[in-house]
Length: 125
Ligand SMILES: [Fe+2]
Image (cartoon, rainbow, N blue to C red; front, top):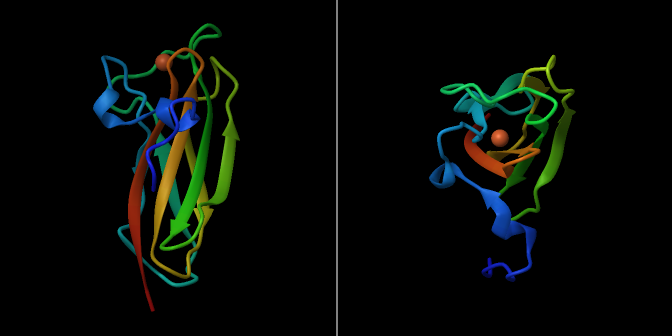
């Protein structure tokens, strides 16, 4: 992939290397390997090490999950739109895969922007 244009949103997608005191990077809990077509659950959590603030002024607004198989475009799996102060940024989604893929989690903090992480899942059978 080419380096993003200086105006591209991709320049503002933070990763673990950008992490400061607060923990914004989504932590993905998923099996390393699943059977093709088998339903399994993944959990995405923000603030596992240091809790992220959850106030009207500063909160995790949404979490999105994508799946990307090799040589294909990412496919949207789920969007979680979180209400501040009550909903915690810890979500679970049931899913299934037919081919090995990378799970991408993206979250938006209303002050600190977009953060992403990813995990590989191997599909057997
Ligand atoms: Fe934040």
